[in-house]
Length: 334
Ligand code: OOG
Ligand code: MG
Image 1 (cartoon, protein in one colour):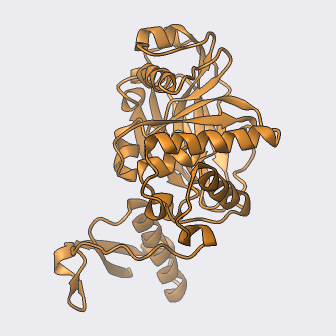
Image 2 (tube, rainbow, N blue to C red):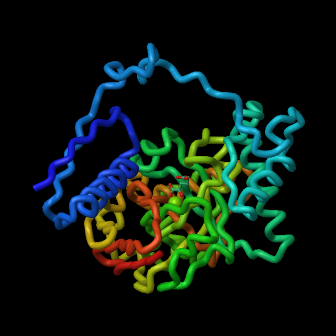
């Protein structure tokens, strides 16, 4: 039985580590011509202050390198809302990742981030896209911990993001897609903040369904600060909606459970309570946040309430599923 021992520095992204373990197992099995199930891969984690490269410990504060010279925009100081919007639109169109804008333009704050997001959506609408709803981002602890940001945000959904059930995730269309299970509302009535409560919010919902959001940050390695991700329309790229339609009044959505599987293996689980205690709280939060910018949620809008679990990387050949208690299952392939 081949046994391989790998050491890694603590704090690495769990999904990258898991991927690395699988690759090592595959390589060992192939190299030794041994059955894959006989291979054991053991990982030990090393404290970052017990690992040095030269005299620099992994725990030493990182000095940020100058921003990569992706485009002339990143070396110019003349940043403004329209330039930032163009930079993000170009990155999306060319499937090219960029360094976060706040590195080059520290004045990009939350309100400027929303102005950039609005400029991007204006441009898309001018190109023929239609706004179909709203999404929330970073509403669960799982998502907030992964991204290192503890504040939710809102963004805009368009018709071009809609993915048909059964349609594979087109890996040529995206930079580095990840997928996350969400509880999705369709609004029966307008919902206008401020002071919207979860009860007001749920009363305005017509239908609830399961969803899978495909996110594809335009930033390298999903590395961004809050204003960057707001500007980038919260990494939006695509979304699937399940075919089981329920009335939210018939379910306790805080207890609605979801099991995420990748190629048959359970990788994560959560319940609706992961999203702000209840998805209706997230919906109320969206209405109140939009009100600060003079906007509201409209009857007919689709609302993605935010990833329940951490997002899963999508690789060629993967089958990723989200199985809900009452909202059915969504299976996505790549
Ligand atoms: C930001 C988008 C977050 C969610 O559901 O939390 C989001 C990201 O993780 O890149 O869509
Ligand atoms: Mg999401």
